[in-house]
Each structure stands twice: as C-alpha cells, then as structure tokens.
Image 1 (cartoon, helix red, strand yellow):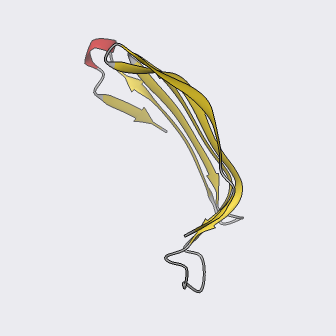
Image 2: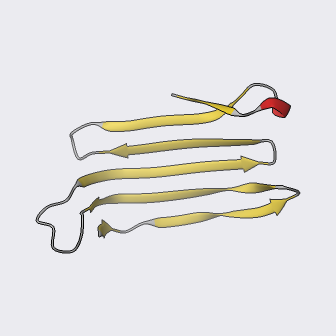
Length: 92
C-alpha cells in the first residue's frame, strides 16, 4: 500500500503510430509498504517528480526524488543517435 498524495497533469494524443504530448507526476512526500499489515514503510520519499515529453520521434524524461535526507535520484533520459535509428537512450 502507499501513503501520500500524487498529482498528474498533462496531455497525450496519438499521432500516426506514435504519441505526442507531455505529462508531469508529482508528490510532495509519501511512502510505500508491503501490505496493509506491514510494520513500517519499505521506502519513504519526498519531492518526487517525473516529467515526460513525447514527440513522434523522441521521448525525453526527467526523474527527481529524495529519500528524506538519505540520498536522492536526479536522472534525465533523452534519445541518442539519429531519429531513424533511435533504439537507445542516454540517461544521467
């Protein structure tokens, strides 16, 4: 089960054989536990955000999440290579 409030904002629409649009998922803080009877949370997070921008020939994404003073993830992914051969992504 989970604790916290999550917001989702964006728009996606089909374009040919692909999708186009952008969306953002965000949560100020929360946690995840294994079942309703679990004693504690498996993961606690703060400042979660996921931003995705989709074009017919590319997808760009950003993920940011903190672990309440115990570290954080700050990652960006974008396509690599020419549009016709994009089968890999570069993430940092």
